[in-house]
Length: 239
Image (tube, rainbow, N blue to C red):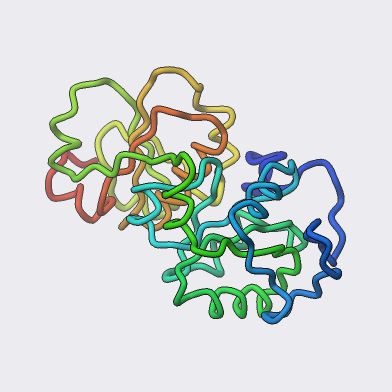
């Protein structure tokens, strides 16, 4: 099941996107080369961000993303299995993308998107998250250490987004397995109520992707468990 089934209009919208995406800023049609990829001012970025068929893709690390991010942004960290999870989360290679990247990664991210066939990037935020944080409101997600997780007394669901094979080899007692690759099940299994969701994967990369999708879909009571199953298995009862 494609993750885009869950994300709906957040990722694909109802429109069929052209292979050449216009930025709407009076620029020529973007063929998506590094030279043509616009570097956007905050005002330009905000104007494009509100369009229904645009996705904000944040390629910073999971730890940095969870500390603060643009509301609705999807996190797929560039320093990690970026190719694999980009394809799973954003399967439409014409999807309009606004990029939030670390300054030093800007060229590398743009080149990688080209190599992977993604033609819809319409710009990167000049100044990145630092600029947004100075001027605009941000969202964030608690990134709990295992010790802090153990101290939490509020009821909730432990959501393990590893593969079924990984889960079957060992998992935390009472954890619910909803693999990231089968993330559409979140729409059927979990309610947007006051129940706390504690999300983890093996080490933290996939859970940050999952948490970002949940927040974009309106789930507010979400925490990430830092270090994932690697950190949990020595401290928490296993099955």
